[in-house]
Each structure stands twice: as structure tokens, then as C-alpha cells.
Amino acid sequence: MTTFSYIKQLDDFKTTAAWLARRGWSEAAGGNMSVRLDALAALHEDDHIELPVEVPYIAGQIVLLTGSGTRAREIGENPEPNIGLYKIADDGRHYGWIAGNHNPSMELPAHFAIHNALEKNRPEDKAILHTHPASLIALCHVPGLNSGKAISDKILSLQSEARLILPEGIGFVDHELPGSLELGLKSAEQLSRHHLVLWQYHGLLASGATLAGAFDKLEVFEKSASIYWKLRAANIDPAGIDKSTIKEILKAFGRLDRY
Ligand code: 13P
Ligand code: ZN
Image (cartoon, rainbow, N blue to C red; front, side):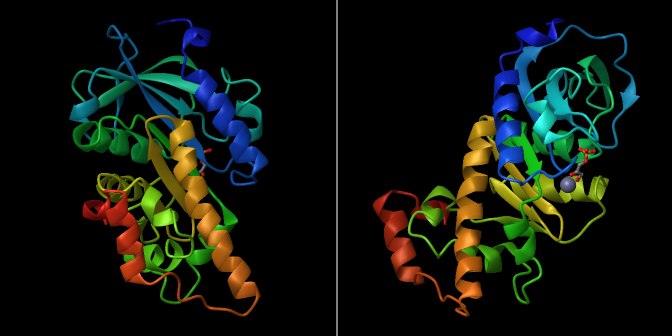
């Protein structure tokens, strides 16, 4: 595992980065992505950088993480200078750089804390993406939409399949400094239960088995939010599909227990 170009997950990075750019969701250097690889690396001699958070569940694992300041529109074209390969040390308190970009995203604390929580609670989710869709950030400025429950009830009731894809609803973290450990720890806590977490006034975090899978869930939430904004532009504040119908849909598909 020394040659960067042989990592099969790079195709997932390339495709998802290109789509994030195409949709205008990751403007300039906005957003970042990471994936845990199944492989374990032999201990690297550079394995000594101290982590801001202890991550015992991913000790010894390898993570691909986008570099700080990298642009989604360029990652898709040329991954190696934009994505770094890192190894979490066996003590779960340090990490080291292996290959590619070696200036990691400022959201490294969030990515590593979330991978740790996912490995513990939902190990099938190996990919995390963070992005800045305008329609989702705008929700944070609506009075009353200041919790995961309020946002989930309002926005995921506007289309009959949205809650089916996201039965647990959306997680929510009150505004924290970008790149801070607090943001990372609160997100990790929320992502143990949800696939999407809205960072107030900042953007969205999504997890999935792959980046494409995380992008699917982001697309569903963003579609519902754009329905909301179309209605608001028409001067309608929608009541949404009533709760009993939402429950009926979830029951029909065996997902009511996740509501
Ligand atoms: P990075 O370029 O450091 O990943 O930062 C982008 C971002 O969106 C921070 O929240
Ligand atoms: Zn951001």
C-alpha cells in the first residue's frame, strides 16, 4: 500500500468531488471528504503526530482525507496532490502521513472523531463528506429551525420518500468554530445515530458506506430543502405531509422503528 494510484476508493473521491463542484455545494475550498480503508498498514516511522482526540476504534487503520484548501473542482481531475493517505497509530492517539497531500483538512478532528464513532456504532459507514449547500445553510436562519427534530419534521415531510431514506431524521450541532474539536466531538455524537448532521450556519456532514452513498443522502435532504424554498418563494409556509401519513409510509417499508 505505498502506491497511491492503486487505491480503489480514489474513484469514489473523484466522482463525488466532481459532483459536489457541479452542484455548487463545495465552493472554492469549501468542504472536505475522508474514507477509512479496510487495509491496515505496517507501522510507519512518521506515525508520531499527536491527535487532538483519542480514537481507539480506528487504531491501526488507514484513512484517505482531502487536504486543507483543496478545491472540489480540482480533486476530481487530479486526486494525488489533493488527497492525503494517513495511518492512525496503534495507540489511537497519534497519526502519520503516508502519501499524497500532507496538509490535512482543518476538519481533521471531526473526521477522525466521527470515523472512531462510526467504527464503534455503524462500522459499515466508511465515508464522510462535509459540504456547504446554500439551501441547507439557509435553513439555519429560519426562526424555529434550530434543532434536528424541528428541521427533520419540517423539511423531511415535504416529499413522500424523504423520511423513508432518512427515517432517523437530521442531526444538528449548534454553531461551533470551524475545525474545532468541539465541532468534531458533537458531530461524532450525532453521527452515531444519524447519517446527516447540519452544522448551524456552516454546512452539512454526511456519512455512508461510500462517498457516493453519503452524497445520495445529502441529495435527498437538499431536494426537500429546495422544495421548502420554492414554497417559501411562493409565499407558502408548508405544513407538510401529516405525521400519521409519514408513519404509515415508514410502517409499510418496515422502517417505523427508526423514526
Ligand atoms: P479545509 O479546506 O481545511 O478542509 O476546510 C474547508 C471547510 O469547509 C472547513 O469547514
Ligand atoms: Zn466547512
